[in-house]
Structures are given as structure tokens and as C-alpha cells.
Amino acid sequence: MTTNTPYTPLATARRLHVLGDWDHAAALLDADQSTEALELKAEILYERLLFQLEGMDAAADAIAALDPETPQARLLAARLAYTRLMFKLDPLPDDYETAEGGYRFASSVRETHGWAEFHWGALLDNIREDADTAKVHYDKALEAAVQEGDSILESIVLRHVAWHVIEAGNREEGLQMLRRSLHLRCAVGLRPQIAAAQLLLATELPKTDPERTTLIEAAQKTANDLNLTWVKSALENLPT
Image (cartoon, rainbow, N blue to C red; front, side, top):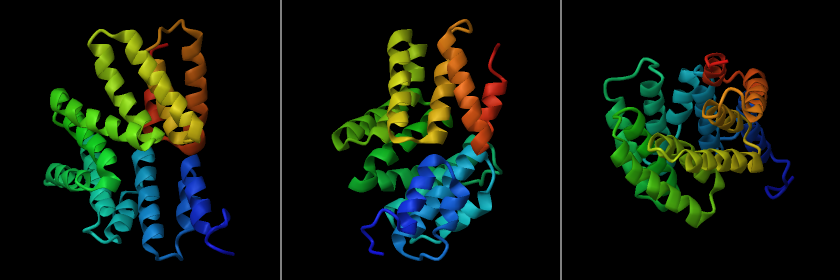
């Protein structure tokens, strides 16, 4: 089997990652110590933590196994620190500095620039509650997403920006952003992220809107299938 075949463990792990089958995806990479495999495994285990809010030690160990001076390692370490802060998962005293420093470093590298700018914006937005400065980083991230044709990054930036647009009184524009975010995720089959987008759009629709009912039903099925902890909790708390 050559490395160009779509059936390599690395390629299969990438596909399972997209589907939210994190356990099987990570297991496929256990025997591969290449940089690409180690980075992918760390990303997989981090994302499992992000959506299930469990598996902190596994994610931290996988990130610690990377070369700590690479942009990807700095970005993942920063995201891990942010997640501890955001979800109050026993945050460390220097987590904010770790996150901001990692995002600053990764934003200076072309390969990670757009994603680092987005995460930097989310840190300022959600932890510091500095929406104005966050917008500067969101704008840079969106520009990078469009230039690079990165529809996943675009979808994630739009989701975060849409809230501020709606709060500013531009409801239809914000809803359009949330719908575009959802459609972009559907186009590449990102099951966990699709459920999150369905949830977020549903929260902005009237309780009598049939689209809201459909979105909730679809998000609930995926959240149950993949054990998406915070998505399930948010769905349970939606007004009925």
C-alpha cells in the first residue's frame, strides 16, 4: 500500500475525525510516530475534549508529545488552555497568557495565521469580553479563510461574528451568516460542528418556526450519537 492510496490509516483517521468518531480515529494512529500523525492525533483528542468535556489528560499528553516550538503545537496548547478557561475545567493560573502567547506566535506563521487569528478573537471575545478587539482578529481570520478557500474556517468565524451582528440589530444579516456557517459545514460533512451550528441557528429562531423544530431534532440525534456534552445540555435548556 502506497502513501497515495485513500486507505492508509492516516487518511482513514482523517475521515473518522470529520465524522466525530474520535476514539477510532485516534486508535488508528497509535503506531505512527510521524509528525503528521502525531499532530493529527493531538488535534483529534483535543476536539474530543472540546465537544465531550472529558479526556483532558489524553489531549494534554498528545499535545505535549509534539515539538513544542512548532506553530501547530503552540496553537493546540493555546486552544487547550482556552478550553480550560472557557469551560472551567480546572484552569491553570497562566492559561490566559499561554493561550494569548500561542495565538500570537501561530498568527505570525502563514500556515496557521487564519486559525490563530480566529482563536485569538474568541479568547478576547469570550474570556476578556472585549468584542471590539476580538472583531479585529475575526476580520483577519475571515480574510484569510476567503483568500485560502478554507470553508471550515469561514464557517466558524461566521458563527461567532453572527451573534454580534444580531445583537447590533441586524437580525436578518446575522441569520444569513448562521445559515451560511451551517451549509459550509454540511458541505464537508463535519458532524459535530454541524450539530453545533444547528443548535446556534435554532436558538435565534421563533419557537413556532418549523425550521427550528427540524434543527433541534437533527442536532439532538447527532449530539446523542457522538455524546456532544455541551450541545446536549444547551438543547435541553432551549425554551419550548
